[in-house]
Amino acid sequence: MPELELLLLLLITLRHLLNIVSTVIFLIHFTTAILRLRCRRRLSTAILRCRFRFRFQLRLSTTLLRLLLRLAQPLLLPLKYVSELNIEGRVRYNGKHFSKMKIPSVITLNSRSYTNKFSLFLFLVHMIGAIGLVCFLVFKGIQGLLEAGEAQRKEKRLLKFFLPQVEAASLLSITLAFTWQKAMRMWPTFMVHFILWGSFIFTLAAGILLICFQRPSTDGVGVVLIMFAIGNGLYSCWVTPRIKFCTKILIKSLEPVPKFGDLNHPTYLTLAAGFLWMSMWILAVIGAINFYFPPLVIIGLVLSMAWVTEVMRNVVNLTVSRVIGLYYLRGMQSSTQFCFQRALSVNLGSACLGSLFVPTIEVLRVVARALNLLEGEDEFMFCCAHCGLKIMDSIFKRGNGWAYVQIATYGKSFVKASQDTWELFEKREMETIVDSDMTSAICFLTGVCSGSICVIVIGAWTFTVYPNFTATLSLLSAYVGYLLTRIAMALPHACVSSYYVCYAENPDNRLFDKTIQDRLNSMKTDRDVIVPTLRSVPSRFAR
Image 1 (cartoon, helix red, strand yellow):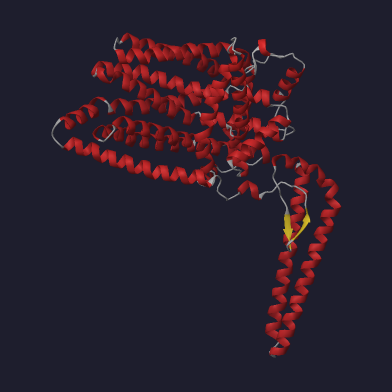
Image 2: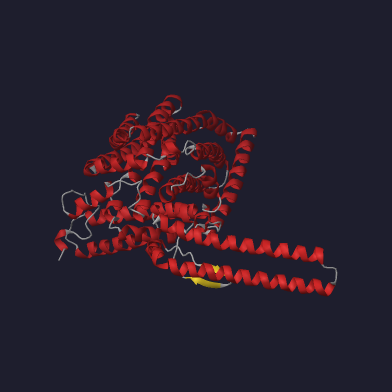
């Protein structure tokens, strides 16, 4: 396939060279006519003659290229596989189609059209409003600090016992994020097991610690953490059969990372920006105490922070996906800086849209799966749950996290990339493997690990210096630790996504081994046990 693509590109290049040669010849004839002829009539005659020659040579070159394409058309027919990605490369010359074949277009790899412009507009409006609100609330906080009275005492107490803990949680979470990422790249097999069970242990320890403080607020938070830890432990037991294949894919997908020495630079910049924005954000939270309806304002700030950090994570995801994706698809070593600039400009709208819908869709899908796993006597309830699951699966095909690879490489919109990517998986019969992939869960539990460690450290510190803030700061430190860690874990997540999507596009690429194909063969021959994600209908209602 690469040889045929090269042949087609050579033919198109030949056409452009013929045009350039014809233009140069025309300029030479025209200049010669001006230098030799003085009579205006003879000059106009010479110009007309030059124009005739130019048109003749242009038509001749077009006819020659058209003939070459007709002769080469049987050889270029195998390029039809590109139509699976809906990449149309119709070439126009002189306003006419001389080839209606669907060919890979090099222009699509460097498309400069902005994707999902409306989402980008909403995010920019949101950022303008968020920056204005944060600045205003910081001003209100400074104003309350300068005015004597109850507000001043409250502000001083918050600055002394609230702000240092949040800043420490941010720095601790960034340190843990890079530690997890580095360890994941160096010891992937060990880290998969460690994250699965470490998140269970750390969350359970954080919950027990908060209950030991023996305060009503910390008891409630501690019970929630213990319940989450139990669910985490059950999940770790449930996915044990998947771990071996997950580690194989993770090891293979991380192999290209050392070839790009600056691949982690976008993560550094994004986390630095996240830390600065987090510092301003916490000052705004403190200032919201002196504003109208503090709970509503703080909830708005929390939701805004979640969207901003998710967009930051997806910007890193798009950057790494383009670098690794082009390496798999074209064998190119792309500039990380250029890919980062594209993610911040051309593809930012898709990152904003995906940041809103992908987490929501995944949560609703998990809820639908959980309802379908329950057994009961009410057939109507389970029929409704089954219907809801089908709806969520249909929505998932039009909005999923696998779309970022094609968004980054081909500049598609979010919905289009989601549909095309899932069609690729269905064509290769990979949807079962992809749907049971653990990488997203591992990255999520890595964030949970960091959040739990932050709860243990910050909770113990706060209980020592000012116990009244223990529950609030424990929740806030867990939130900060989770968000910042997810940004750093976007790199391994993007590498695995690129591996799956690029394999589905071209399984014969020499950069891929037989891991996925062997897994598919094992599933078809029932020699490999795949833990099902769920069963669509309870067994007692199956016909």
